[in-house]
Image (cartoon, rainbow, N blue to C red; front, top):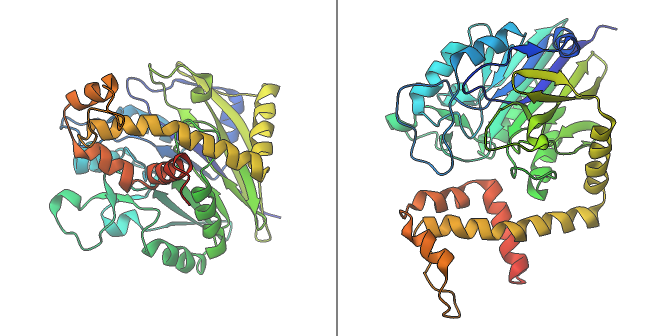
Length: 374
C-alpha cells in the first residue's frame, strides 16, 4: 500500500543568522516526507518602515528562506500575524525569496485564500492556511485601496467555510493550517477548539495549528487529528529564555488511498542546532496537558483562571490607548494608571484587543467571570 508522508513543523524566525546544524535524526524525518511544511513567521527584512500596529514588528534574513529550501521544506505557510509587519514590500520580497516552494496564505485576495493542491502517488492533498484577525489580515474583499491590496487569509471570513467544502470535493485529503491562539498558554481557548472542530465537520481531515509559541495538546475529533499548537521550530529571541519557547513538535501525517495515520516527534533548538528531542519528561509533559484537555471540569477551570489573570495585561493595553482614567473607581490615586496614560495614547492597541478573536475571547471570558455576568 503506497503512502505519502507530510511533515508539519512550527514557527520559524531566523533574524540575525540561520540555523547551521540539523541532526541526522531530523534529517531522516525531513527526507522521509514528500512535503515538509513550516510557518515562516516574519517577512524578509526590507529597508522600509514597519507598519503602524500593536506589538513587536519582526523580520528575518533572506538566508533563512534559502536554508529552509536546502533542508527540504517545500510548502511555506505565510498566514500569520507578523507577515505584514513591513507592508506589501516585505510580503512580496518574502514570496520571491522562496524559489522552489509552494507559498500559502498570503498575497492579494485570491492568492491568500487559494488552497494549495498537491498530487503525489495518485493521492490529492489540499492545504489551506489561515490566521486570526490582526494587522494585515484581509477582511474586506471589496476594499481596493493600495495599502490593503496585500495581506493574509482570515480564519473567520465568511468565505472560508465554503472554500473548505468546495476544496474537499476535489481532493482526497484536506489539511487546515491555522495560526491562532493565546500565546504562552499550554491549552487552547474553547472557542478555537470549537472552530477547529467545525473545520472537520466541513470536511477537513486534519487541523494542525501554530502561533502560541509553545506546545499545546491535541485530540481526535471524528477520528481526525487536531493539534492546537506545534511550538517554535526555530525562533531564537534574546528576551525569551524559557525552555518551553525552544521546543516544538513535528507532526508526520501519512496518507494512503484508504486512510490517514499520524505520529509526532519532539524537537528543540539551541543557538544554531535543531535536534530531535527524546527526553522522557517531554512525553510526561504531553500526557499532563492531554489529561487536562480531556477533563472538562479541570480544563475550563484552567482556562477561566488564565482569562481572569490576563485582565491586568489588557488593562495596560487600554491605558496605552488613552481610554482609561487616571484614578480608580474608588477615587484612589493609581500610579499604574498615571504611568500608562503618560505613554502616548494610541487607539491601535485597544483596536487589536477587540479585533483579534483570541484577545476578544479572552477579554470577554475574563470580564464575565470577574463581574459575574452571564
